[in-house]
Image (cartoon, rainbow over all chains, first blue to last red; front, side, top):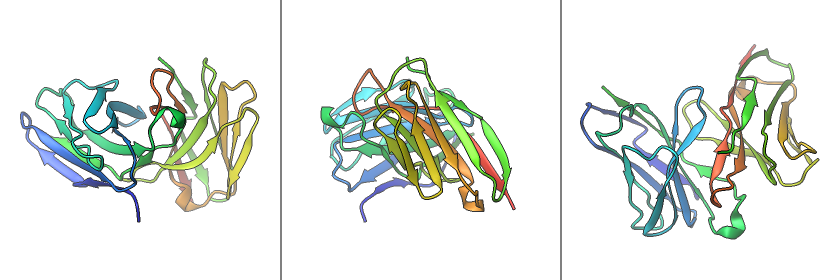
Length: 116
Length: 112
């Protein structure tokens, strides 16, 4: 079955360490996204990529970095510069392209990151 | 940027009751989407609305695209325990295609 796989489900890190969250999709989607979810705040966009080898900052990109070397993969690195990294991180994908401006997103099951 | 006002923030209901929630905005949209997030999982698309005034059902769920194009409503009839979760409305962002703006979510808790 096609879908989006995020790993690991739970991640624990010490403050000051960088950590990379994995996101893989086999839906043949061009566009991929990273969202951060905090209680009562909905989903906030961190980074997005509309095509391989290209990505753009979202609304809360500070302290994060991404790469898009393959269509299927869009890893997110949470750096030590992120002041409040503990959160639930969601990866998503969509068909992409201007004709799909209202294309629904398909989400992975998330990674819960705890930094102490 | 675009702001979606989703209410209520949370609901505690008894099994069998109907549930209503809504999203409003000061901006006009051509699409409204409703997602549900089960505890510990990613959101899943429930209903997509593409036309003002449209009323669409998915099982016990019914969503409407407001005639002013500035709001949308989601109703759940005869709630069951598995309806528990967070329900989000979402609209396409105007600053770039492919990106969605989400409401803050409505937390639904169903008690037997």
